[in-house]
Length: 242
Image (tube, rainbow, N blue to C red):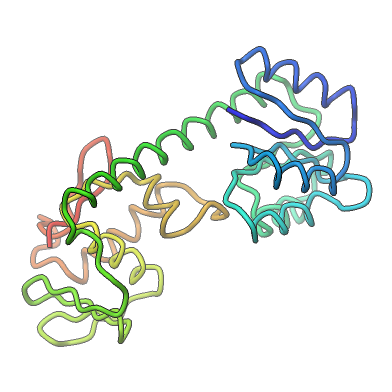
């Protein structure tokens, strides 16, 4: 995995780079925000470790700019401990946050967890593309009407209906349902659903998916205790059956 380390403390940067290299990662380094931004654009890293307090352009501005241009995962590094700084970091698009001083073991564990998530999502996306290639109807164009018996989603009207009666759903419930409906019959992992519906910048976990699935089931399932439309795929996530 190619990792960009943006850290102005040379000793810390070299220590982090040394330990990451020992784990088999390719490491590139920058000492200030603008250089980090330019390296990210040029090198397209798989992960960025980004210090908050940087010369010139600070980490928050770098993170905010990167989020507008790419979906690379970002772990922010900072000596600050105030809760507001953590909130700001996550709001501008960071995926994780680690406070200095930290142990190399902790940092490597965070990197490993992020690497696992990246791998799983890429595998799911690859599998999804293969499924779509085999089954042309898996992907539905925008502004179409998807019908599953008495259950209909009208993307033109941004509406879900049962027996021609509109359902009252929250925006994320609607987005989640459309994503599931467009991939009918495909087992989708929670991580893939999070990435596609909520995005990398979302500060949450797979529990969010479970909660929204439960809300949808309460509204579209004939029997809420025995779901038949959105079924659980044990050890993976969910599959929409229609």
